[in-house]
Image 1: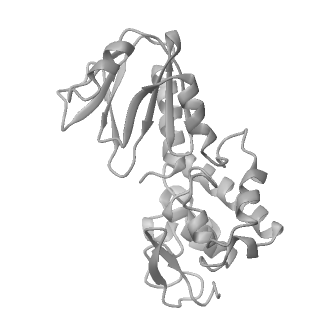
Image 2 (image 1 turned 135 degrees about the vertical axis):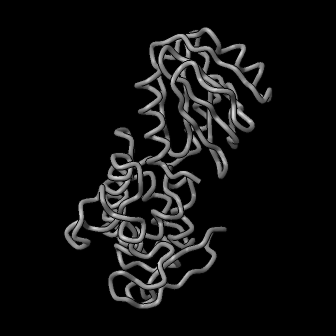
Length: 263
């Protein structure tokens, strides 16, 4: 599932390419036919990202909510676009560009009240200027749940996924099964700073990059996948060379170094 930096990148790119234009909106697959008919011919005003959710606001107060889930994917094309490939839920065509959306977990029109209800369920998003980290600390600081579980809960912090949780906890030398309430306020502040910085790097470079360029000996733009990450899907910890442990935590595979991240 795409993590928050990917969603913010899509919002930024689509706002740049399509905002201010009246779009032709279609549903080649047919599952969004009624919604496409409502949106087609309306001007796209804004595209906003919050965590793993996208909101496209059109003229007339119409809003499209998209959550990619595990299988959702956007494909961008020059306009006019080629024949649809696969089950295209939404096709939007602007003046110079177009995009297709395949396989999203959620794709439906929402009212402002429904959009607000979705946002009210989410924790703060490290990539947003309006994020209030104290809201996340209030949940984490009193929770018996493992911090590795809490980081996957979008109601605690929005936009964090499996890679960021593994890598940030490794940077902090915190065991993933440490109860949230056992973290200090200073540790939470450090975690939030790491998440904000690393997700901004991911937004800029279109990929998750954790490693320090000085230690790798390459700029971020030239690192390969194994160089960009420190423990995620690694056999050995890049810090101490101990064997990385993996196990299921919050229904996803957690990666941690038993030497750097002792219980």
